[in-house]
Length: 217
Image 1: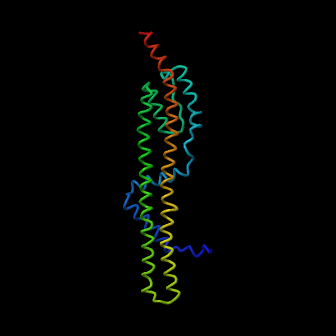
Image 2 (image 1 turned 180 degrees about the horizontal axis):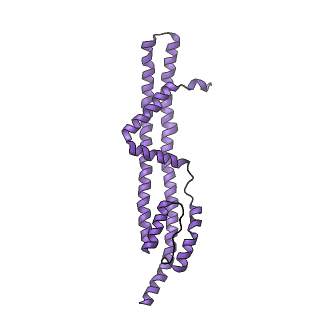
Image 3 (image 1 turned 120 degrees about the horizontal axis):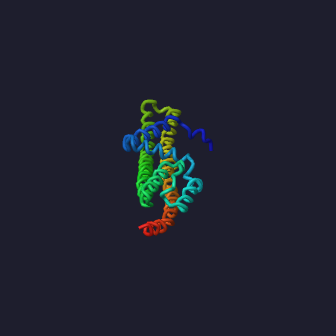
């Protein structure tokens, strides 16, 4: 098979350009911006639980040794996690950690869901513009006459437009949408394990803190 014959910029421009424009008009600029950010996130290094746990090991040691009153937050490089840990230390309560984590988790999952839905909409639109490219190609027959070469070119463009629409929808857009969802699910599971670990360090010293407070009273 000669794959060179499967490359034609005209139907490709109709399908890709039309799908992109229609997606922006249907989903809106905000959702498309979230989608672009989610796509960029796919090529970044995934959430590294082991590395962050090592960064938090001194904090966990401080909590076990002196409780949260003397513990000092150490940056991990993850803004939402740092903010949640800071809230726990300042509020002297693991519930503050959980509250911030829950709020941030909802925001992250909402962004991922918006991106996935936007790409799903684009996947629905791509075959439509494949059909549009087919109709545009066939419409050129009236202007070009029925010369054999013109006829074959028009048929080739129409077939390629349909093919591009199907490939764009099912080989690119739909799989990428699912990849964003899987990436978000894996990250949130890793974050939850890390948050539970930090909270367990606090829970381990909480009884000691209560006994100390009772004795002081």
